[in-house]
Length: 150
Image 1 (cartoon, rainbow, N blue to C red):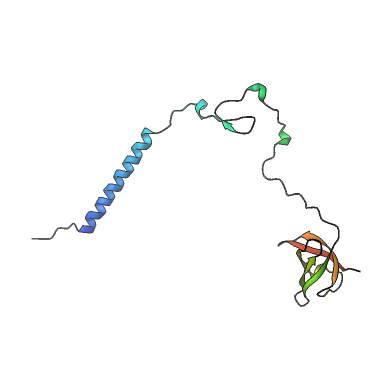
Image 2 (image 1 turned 45 degrees about the vertical axis):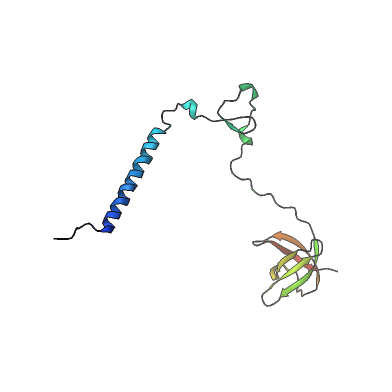
């Protein structure tokens, strides 16, 4: 007698396939019974009340506020310029002449501020007292218009 052509793995795959098909059928039937098709337009409408909350009840006409089109802004507003203190004082904590950059420690805020050789009026070295202005750079605050303090 010959062996059966159905192996254990084939039987298991068939069982999984049938189980998966049965699960899909059940989900399909569930979707059909719980569907919300056929709702009217009034049932699908949402309203915004005076406080900005979404409700299913329309707002009374007397409570509405008039809004001009110019007051409506879509998107995020541009960031306003940060007020810049005119002149700050600080001490050069590090400066690499060969690479052309360093850091100044602001005496008022104790903040370390990047300085590049292009923004120097003349050569500086470590522990020099300087005056400078701060601008926003690519990676943070940058000192510009750096001069030696008297």
